[in-house]
Amino acid sequence: MKIHEYQAKQIFAKYGIPLPQGEVAFTPEEAKKVAERIGKPVMVKAQVHVGGRGKAGGIKKAENPQEALEVAGQILGMEIKGLVVKKVLVTECKDIDSESYIGVIVDRKTKKPVIMVSAAGGIDIEEVARETPEKIHKMAVDPLLGLQSFQARDLAYKLYSDAKIANKTYPVILKLYRAFCESDCSLAEINPFITTPEGEVWALDAKINIDDSGLARHAEIEEMRDLDAEESAEVEAREKGLSFVKLDGNIGCIVNGAGLAMATMDLVKRFGAEPANFLDIGGSSNPEKVVNAMNIILRDANVKAILFNIFGGITRCDDVANGIVHAVKELKPKVPIVVRLTGTNEDKARKILEEVNLTATSSMEEVVQKAIELSGTSQMKMFES
Image (cartoon, rainbow, N blue to C red; front, side, top):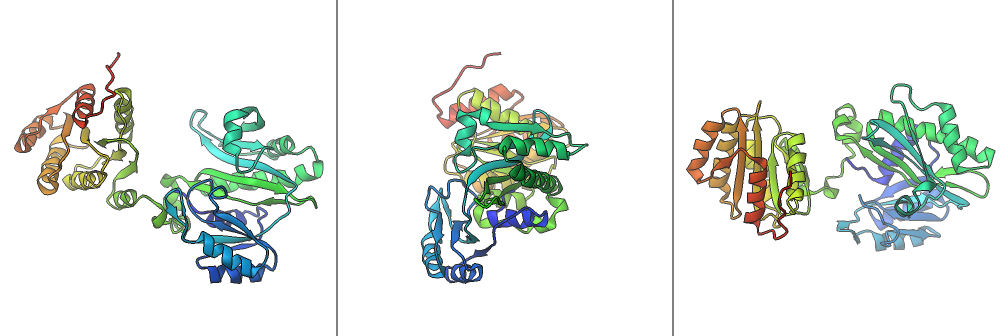
């Protein structure tokens, strides 16, 4: 789950990370009042779940409250990468002497949190990572021992040769790591982390992504979810107990089990097409889930074929087949449907599918190739074992 910058700063504030004064505003008039309370020049920053806000004109400086009103009026309502700006963060300006990057992620290869720091922080950190990766220093942290002070100090000295600045920075790294762990984050970063000419350090920006699996422990963070900023189909799927992520392809995938869903998507790409989604109906045998899944996928105009890949264990193939039959009769899809069923009650399932003139195969390769063929995708590749 993504949260906005102002929400991430609320979490950072609990851990004592140094932050400029600021408040969120939903109207130009509110932005003006916030600027009046701050009493200094401010930055007005669009709050949307995408990067590149500054380059898109979504971050502007205001020298006084009247300018804050005018600038907020320009930013509110603008569209940045398909998202409409509905709120802005009005925050105190700081004089910048240097910009750095500090972040924590989960590294799936090492199965550990990894802290990354770079003295080349700022808006183009992605370009730094791509073109000059040697400028980014990484440290994997033992999840049992946690981040030690000497490790944080070592990272701070990779950012700053000035001992006074480094000694102000390493406690921030420790606090960021603690916020990352205790909030069940998949990502927590400060970019830019700045120094001022007076030798102060500040977290000018904040970004946090939360691991959805940890949200049950954080009701206060769950309340930060901005449904307007999320794909409507993903919101609906979550409400109906489905794991769904919209993608850009044209093969709609309905699968039971996250691992099988990933393997199905990989095979679709292997044969030269692109999946339209990740969709895991889970281990339930409730036919209604199949109807809901079909309904969500069919609203995607890019979908040219629907691929079912069901391995019946806890999930019974005949229940899924009943769901497919109900969905076909109720929704009357105009795109072809292909089915792979294997496992519990697959013989019963095949007979049920005959009611709507569908047949099922037990081969993943065969069903994926058939889906691509029926979708009209021209980049079909031959499978190589």
